[in-house]
Length: 103
Image (cartoon, rainbow, N blue to C red; front, side, top):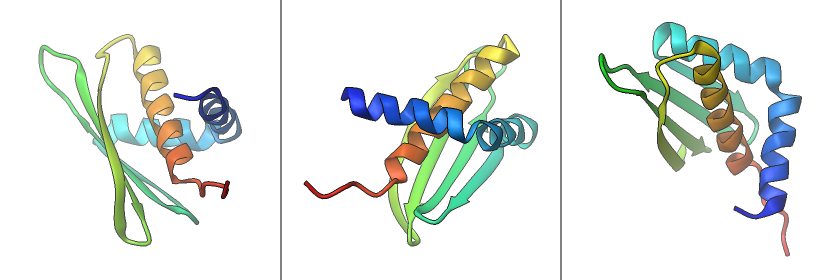
């Protein structure tokens, strides 16, 4: 991943910390959550397994059209590591929805 993309993800994580943490809490509490922004929507689903890491499924839509998805694992514990992994994945999804500047 290019350095400017990593910097943008870090910037989003810092700017949207409250939103990302609230969404991560919702994911952990109910198993699903959604973020709606002008550029599109991000839906998350946390799938829990009894003896394995959790599975995090994040989908992105732009104007109702699928714009990508990601699938990853989230540690079962400690809770702080789980929350950090979820907020990082959500920040990456937000960065992917942002409009790309023309070259």
